Image 1 (cartoon, rainbow, N blue to C red):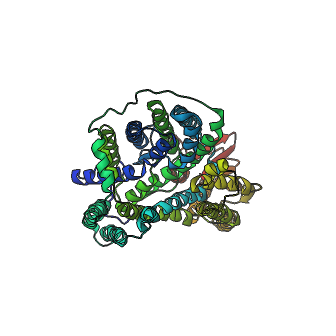
Image 2 (image 1 turned 90 degrees about the vertical axis):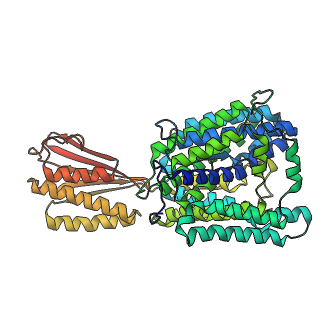
Image 3 (image 1 turned 120 degrees about the horizontal axis):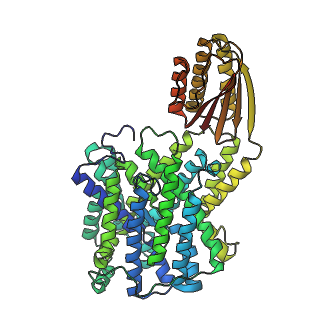
Length: 564
């Protein structure tokens, strides 16, 4: 991404034509993938065609509203990056169970409760960040990509069509391959067409599908019975609650929170060339927005909302991460909620075209997760966390492998996202046992003593699997502080206390006999602090979020909290 010429960050405004086409690309992908849940729930609840149409319209309205909320750069709601929404396909089994148990009122009621629960729990994810280190979020992003593969390959190869007709369609495969090659060519060989890669692929795929007779003519014929304009309001809305649905929805909601953490982290990474670590405040705001979107959907008569993972792959591929594009796509989705006939027509993207788009998107999603994992120093514990989670997630996509489980349990647990979430959190908790480390070092402030200290710090950072970038910053910063103390007459040994817990390194540098140094509680309030120390503190503050310089009598204490 860093080498992309046509890159637009969250606050940047692309040219109008580019904004319009990019918004349409994202809208079409959400439209194609984001309505699988309401369609399935409508069938499980035996809704009439009219009721199903209203449910789809309300779902579209909810998706658009939630996407705007998630994208807002607000303190309370929104990740501040383009991150669209879609109906949470991982909640399919829980919603279908609720529909069969208590009809649509129970689905709406549990959706409302799920949204509230998600918003509350999501507001405290920073406090539980020890459960979500870089290897967990990277693995989750990778698993998110994995979860789309079965759908992508089925549509790409034409498996649903084969199941219906019993014969394989060669034209189907031709359309899929050519559509994918068009997007690949636009991305890899023609820099100026890269932002339009998906749209060009869709256009070419539509034309080829029309020429080869792949369109679903029966579905188009059914559209004639749909109204052109209709308010997305059900005739009657009622909410219900049943304790039997609590556990399935709780598991799905927790999985959605982890899913959101991975997606919001990915959104931050692809939209910031200088990305170093997750912005947890924005992640929490984004999860609150997603929870609020689900709550709104439940009140209006819709289904659970979550982030649209596939759209992140498109944003990464094109380099367009502007919030304006996200607002445009969401605005179109909201408008379409009032036009059922037009919505139905756009939803009928030919299967080979959709398969090619998903395959194109999945490659970038999985590459993002793989890239995050490459930046982590994997020790033996982390290797098990990462790959056991991936292996068990993949196992849920193998038919019949988990058939020994009771059907109700299998419906909830046997999806890559839910299984990945459960295993990741469980393995992280298990492998954290006995990982806390404490080290106390004594060192002089002279040049020769600093060289010896550097070697000790390098060994400690290597043992604790600290990234090279963070290790270099810590060592360089401690060196600068020691040199500053030496220049200002501190010749006594300094004591360095270090505490490691896999998510954070806490460092305390203590020095005595510092009567010549004045107190400074913060880096920005350093009246009387010698210039050498001031520069060292500014450098540390620019690299780390928590740096405190505290005086107690003749003792000075520099405290650094470094998130891993």
